[in-house]
Image (cartoon, rainbow, N blue to C red; front, side):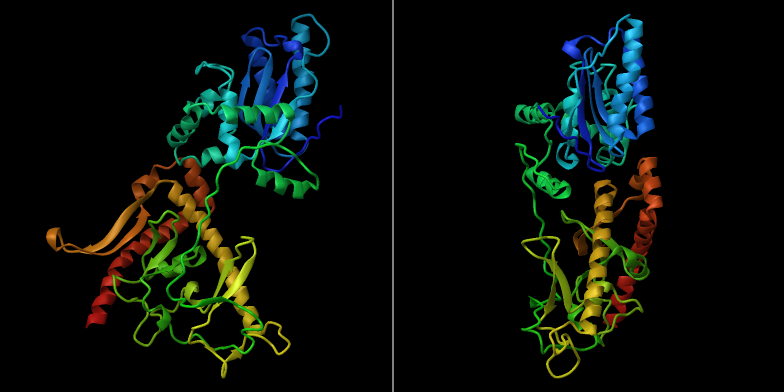
Length: 462
């Protein structure tokens, strides 16, 4: 039979097992286990293999690890074959190999199966105090030089206590026999522990067919709400809109009824200098600037002008927008608000040239939309990370007390400084390096501008 093809996928963990020959005991006493783990620790560090979960029993070694390159795992296994076999044969006066042929391996789709495989491995021993597994590290935070936390494990929580609590839910959950059989089968057959979609993408990547039976999980699709300032969004079409001309954005009256505006990360500090920048309370939270106390926007004056020098990018992209197609989320289409007062067929700059090609004006608009879309993705990732950290608290803007209390604005969240300060040092250090702390500082400073909203409201009443 031909050997199973080894596949390496960058930044993707592999489930690996190395068995002894004829189920022979190859770990006789504690010194054997300790010598073996020392060899594995040294070899994994030398060859760039991050081990996330493992167990060593009397006749096999099983683990989940992410190789740094295509040679990392083979070189580690060569080290075990050479160094531990030499140690074992010398100690017990024997010759020959102690391992059963080639090791078995299965690529693991981390987003779906990382924690399931980790728990599957660690549950091989029924003893929660078993010395020769990663359980003491992943579930009890004990020292173990062999274990490197996977990035998804780190994202379980922003404190080690939170991570352990969430991982323990997977570990102590009722055993799903179907899932365990699936994981075991993938390793035994050396197929891929993943969803169908993951395999299809992998087939495109490596240019060959990979077959495997999998269990799947439903995927939740998110939809964006249409913003009120757009009243008639249509896909831009060079035939339908060939006569359309656009005029300069001289007034913002189309946005005068907006109570808040979406904000992207690279402009947050500029907007936060005047208006409160906060997080929405909805399930798919976003970053917004509060510009109202329940009525019309306080940021657009009577002449339709923005009251500060910097106009948010969300307004500057009007009357254009960008959206994904239903068939392909990565494919974008350009939309226009056909009812916008900026469009005309008699005056302004053409959207299309006579030959149907995009005009310079339209090219500029598309480039701006693309840049804004990229910044929106960056912002969404930052917001998601902050939300998952658990440091946000609900807030509202109100006046009066008791029976006289009137809530003007609610449905938003802000960072709680006390919770922020309790985050793990590694999280805070990462946030400092990536500029997230600077971003949070601008957000917290902006909360002082709630008073600015009251001042603007008083000026408008007067």
